Amino acid sequence: MDIITQGIAGAVLAQAGADRQKGMATAIGFAAGLLPDADVLIRSADDPLLALEFHRQFSHSLLFIPVGGLIAALLLWPFVRRHSGFLRLYLYALSGYSAGGILDACTSFGTQLLWPFSDARIAWSLVPVVDPLLSLSLCALLVAGWRRRQRIYPITAIGFALVYLALAHAQQQASYAVQQQLAEARGHIIEQSVVKPTLGNIVLWRSVYRYGERYHVDAIRVGFDGSIRVFEGQSVARYRPDVSGHTRLSQQSVDIARFNKLSQGYLVRHPDEEHVIGDIRYAMLPDSVSPLWGIRLDSGSPDSHVDEVTFRKTDAETRRLFFGMLLDKQSVHSQN
Image 1 (cartoon, rainbow, N blue to C red):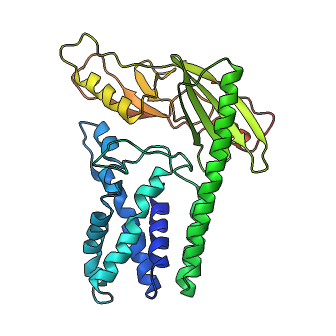
Image 2: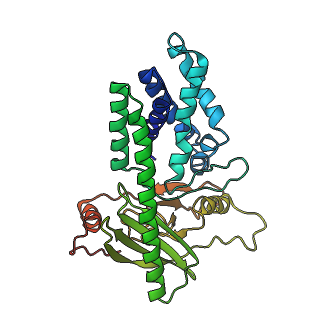
Image 3: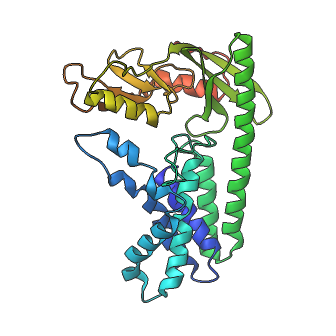
């Protein structure tokens, strides 16, 4: 999730566990909830992929939660030592820090929850990174709990989040069912697939599946009333890193392999950028085959690191198409 929502979730958990000092528990939980994303500071100007590899890695691991809570408590101790004992501070910080990894695993990028035992990135793809309905609801209940000093509000916030995630799971499963129907109608057998929510909602979903050597992309709208609308997209050839016959891999070949792992194999060549390899799971429009981000190769410098590139096109036409699909306007027609 976005960092502010992680802070809010951390504050909710700390507030729910506080029998008194609601204000202090809220502040500590919020600060501790932000700490897991301090991993964004791990980066290299020469190696853009380093930041991606460490983002949502050890700092988001379940095993690291007690350590992360301790680090947060030590950082906050000089500010609260006159108002609280260290054990109470640690419990609040532990509660706040624990929200980070689980919440991020509910999004689609992937979180190494089982590090160091496994480097697999767990991504349940239930909610978007930015979800205003979830964030604002948690924030409203958090503020109510802080002002009225009653535990019922943060407990209600936790209950709301669980119900919301359950609803998102139901929406996702409905989208997977539609994806399967689309593949069968096309005579395809799905070999690899993902369905993920689009920005800010759990109504409009991006469907990506692989059949043979092509990825097929569609947008699926699942209304809360049970209505289904499909916006059929296009297909794009799968990109396979080729390292056969090389006695020594170039740095760019190594970086392609690293990016392939980060993208869980969902690699394609950008249709409009000859030297860009992108992650087909992400795009500005849910039915588009133009990746949102990727890496740019430099054939003239094979031993230099690749560059990371993003394509966040947010012009009026892109917004019109997106909201047209989200709001189920019949006039929407996207050319990819």
